Image 1 (cartoon, helix red, strand yellow):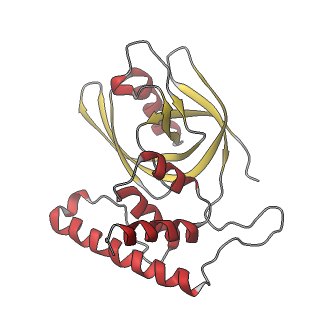
Image 2 (tube, one colour):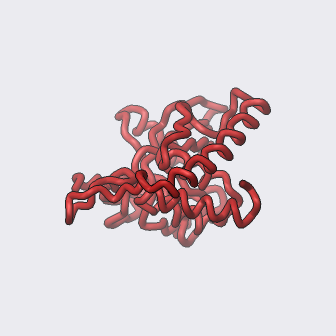
Length: 222
């Protein structure tokens, strides 16, 4: 088990960040400007978690800090930062690793901080047995993965034709990797945020591929 992350700054949002995912943010509120500067200075991530209850930053009443995040979120690494205007930062972040919140509390400046337990990558060995939970050898899984990868490849090609400078995904494009393919499709399919959160929380990539594949078959996207 990986050591706890103490004093993790948290950014509750109305979206779900997946490992390997791209998250552009426009940061303007003082507590998050300070958080961004500290993360850039110290080269540390912050935590993104879907809002369970409460308001996102842009819609929260002044002085009201009522956001309650989901227990599972994803660490965000800042990969680009630009100043749109004085007091407004445009940042691009990469999702790196999931975490589970152990506890959280607001600081005096309104920033939510927590203690988090990192979650290993999809298909990591089961701690109790030492055996891998990966099912990639299943022929049916390989067929589903190939179908999902084909759809995702078309999405990538279409996005590249529209605007190669603003791709929705970060390279490299790992079209043979079950985690990468299922995560990227879960990001773009027209599903509810709650369903997206549930897919992100899954620690078994073949199961996520299967669920995404079922959705696309049901909605005639394959």
